[in-house]
Each structure stands twice: as structure tokens, then as C-alpha cells.
Image 1 (cartoon, rainbow over the protein chains, first blue to last red):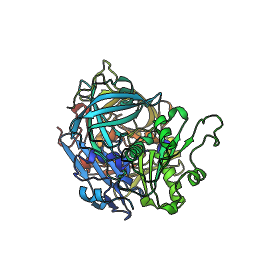
Image 2: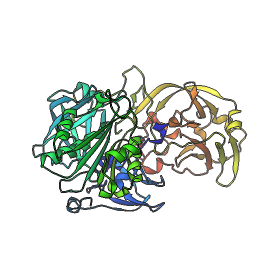
Image 3: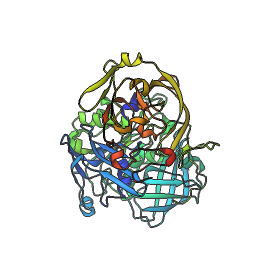
Amino acid sequence: MIADIYNYLDGNAAAGELSKIFVMDVTAAEGQCAHCGATKRFAEAHLYMQCPGVVARCAVCQNILLRLVNAGERVWLDLRGMTYLMLETPQLSDSLSPK
Amino acid sequence: MWRVGTVVALHNETATARTITLEVRDWPGHVAGQHVDVRVTAPDGYSAVRSYSLASAPNPEGRVQITVERLPKGEVSPYLTQEVVVDDRLEVRGPIGGWFVWRTQQTEPIQLIAGGSGIVPLMAMIRSRASTGGTAPFRLLYSVREPGAIFYRDELQALSDHKHSVSLTYAYTRSAPKDWPRPPSRIDAALIANATWPSNLVPTSYVCGPTSFVESAAGLLSACGNSPDKIRTERFGPTGDRQ
Amino acid sequence: MGIISRGFSGRRSTADVKLPPGQYLTTDFPVLSAGPTPQVPLDQWEFTIDDGTNVLRRWNWKSFRDLPTETVLVDLHCVTRWSKLGTSWEGVSLDTMLADLKTDASYTLFRSYGDYTTNLPVKDLRNKQAWVVFRFEGKDLAPEHGGPARLLVPHLYLWKSAKWVRGMTLMHHDKPGFWENLGYHIYGDPWREQRYSGDE
């Protein structure tokens, strides 16, 4: 069923939530999946927001990249699924354009 | 983080979609393609947050527009499309997003592919280009169920009539206008071959719409030679809503 | 609290019912998922009970469906604040599945197809408190709601009712599952509003 297969959004959908924690834009950040090594922009991650937290999965292997929970007064963040996340300063992202 | 936006204008795009113009105090400006989170709160404190792409071009006046499609089982969209009146206030967080954006400095050919309400952020890009007198080559492939579902119809028509402007192709998936050359169907490889920039021109493509639409369209672009890093995507929910 | 949006009430119903603190009544059935919907062919489906070393019980779909079932009418309380009352499920009681199983383990970790897990004390599974269910409102359980079979433990928040359940591991010490290790309460009693770790 289409609804089952395409039950995800992408990294753009989580950007507002993540802007509470990350000062720099996350959607354009490059991240590496700790499981399969795929390197992609966070905007391309598969996002599951319809659950008691935010779960971002690697578009290639479906392993979890990141999880976030708003637990009342606290925010819990699990970043074990990424080897790295590379964010660009605003000046850099303004000057770069797709070539 | 949350700013107050006051509704200053409302405009029906279709029978089920409405554009809301908000004046947002201290609005920092935005880039075409970005979105905002909108928060609505009931008197008992219950609140809901939804993401909406900005439809308006960047402007210095602190006015932004979102276009909201009313979902049959929606919780927020019926309120925004049917209840909200001028002078109502909504809370807005943003602008959000730095990847699915088009900046006026970009000069390469741009391919826009919209599925349903996915047209919204792409319209911001088209308007941004128009407002700065930009001449970057733009093509738009806009897939809708039927003619009554088209957003910004008159504006798109005027722009595409204009020489050196946006080249516009509609694809109808359920019912097409009389004598339409292509029977109603989803976009396919043939349509991509006919209506989009050839990949050897190395366009940057922006694909937006429901997840299933985006996967299909991005896959088709990739299959005809566009490299993945030149295809930018933004997925709405299966029904077009982000949440 | 945000500014009040004139005229907004959301999709909640008002009714004269007693709900756990902080919950709202809903009439639809939201689909919440942390990942892709597993597609599990019935001829490959299995439910196992292990103790971390040995498999103690194993059912395939046929032997599972041969077990006696019951139909229950229960209320659901999701930690995201919606409650849905009077839902009807058919399934196998954990009392049946744990019958004759000798164990001194006090805790379990339920495992699902996909990577979801959730932990529960053994005593919360016994005495008509838990079922592995496969029908909802008289129809086969849809994949988006956890089909072919999910756990149902209505006295706790719904995240404990693991969808796409595939087995349970008996443990001597409590070990947090998928959400319990990221801020959610280890037990999750909605009537004491135990949403997050640190809640009393």
C-alpha cells in the first residue's frame, strides 16, 4: 500500500524542531551514516515525525541516523547513527550555490 | 523563536486551498524555498504545529504568504482555510531550511517539478526570479489531479506567456481539459524527456510534493542522466500535509 | 504557552469521560511510526520467547493461530496525548503464551520486525493485562497499525504496545527499549502520567 511504503518525510520536515538545538542550518548539512557509510545531505534523510519523537533514517540503508525526543522540560538527542554531521556557517552557505 | 504573524489578506486559490498573507513582526527575511512552522493554540492550551512552505518572494516588508490545502481529515488545515479571518494571529517559526532553496545568484538552468501542493515553494522561486528581473532559464512541470486544483493559475499563465520567462507544462493525473493531448496519467519517462531540461545542460532540479510523487519524479530525473547532487527534493506527507 | 488562536480547537472531542491526566479524546486512529512499515509474509512470521541464551517457545503463524483467542474492548492512551476509547481487538492472551513457562525473570524486552523494542515487567503481562493481537474492529490488523500482529498492553501508554511484534526476551534486570532509553519513562502508567524518565 502506498501509505505504508511512503510513510516518511525528509530532513526538511525536522528542520524546525532541530532549529531549537542547532544554530546552523541542518538541512544542508552533510552527514555520514555510521552503518553503511553513505554520505548525504540531511535534507535527504527519511524522517519519521509521527511517533513520540523524531527519527531520521539513512535513505540508503534505513538505519537510524538521529533521534530526538521532547521530554517535557528536556530534549534528548541520540546522534549515534552518524559518523559526522558537517554544518556550514551562514556566510559559507550564502556564498555557495549549486554549480 | 516564535514570532506573531497577523493575517492581513486571504485569497482562495482553489475550492480547497487558500493563500494567507501574514505580517510578521521582526521578520528576518527569507530565501525562496524555505518554509515556516505555524503554531495554533486552543484556549485550553492544546497546540498543534504544521509546516508550510513560503509562497512569497523575498521582500523587505515583513509580509509572507503561505498557501494551505484543506485536508479532509486535517486538524489544522480546516481551521486555516475556513476559520481564520483578517486580523487573526498565528505564531510562526522560521524561516527554515537551507538546502531546498533557490538563490538569485544562481544562473544555471532550473528545473522545477511540482506535485499538487508541492508547487508552493517552487512558486516562491518563480516569484523571486521575477521580482529581481532574473533571467536564469526556468522550466516548471506541474502535476495536478485536474484543472481546478491548479494554484496561482493566472499568475503562472501570465508568466509563461512572457518571453524569456518560465516555460510551463501541466500534467493532469485524474482528469484533463477537453482535447488535452496527453491522457490523464502520472508523470513518466516520456514526459520528463519532453518537458524538462536535458541533463547535459546540467540543470539544478527542485522536486516537491507528496513523498510517493517525489520518489517517482526524482527517480525519473536520475534515470535520464541528472546526478543526484543536482536533484533537490522536499517531501510533503502522503496527503500533501507535512505532519 | 503560545498565543491563543481564535476559534481553534483541534480534532478533539469533548465528552464526559474520565481520561488519564493530560490526555485528549480522539475518534480517529493516528498512525505513529518510527520507521518503514515492515512487510512480513505470514509464512515467515514467527514469535519466539527466549531468555537471552535459549529459545524457550516458538510459534509460526499457524501454531500461533491455533492458540485460543479472546476479544477484548480496551481504551488506548498514547503518550502524544490522544486517547481512543472502546477499541475492539482479537488476540492471544500473554497468560496463554506464558502458560507452563517456568522462569524467574522479572522483566521482558519485546522485539519487533524492524528495530523497535520496548521493555515490560513480567507481572504486567499476566492476569489479563496483555495480548498479542491480530484483529482490530473485526478486521485483520492492517500493517500500518502493526499487522500481522502487535502487542497490546492497554494499562500502559501505547508505545509499550509494540507493533509488528516478533518475540520477547526474558531478563533479570530491566533494560530500556527504543523510547525508554531516550527520555521516556521506563514503566509508563498513564494514570500516574509517567510520560518521561524522572516523572514520579
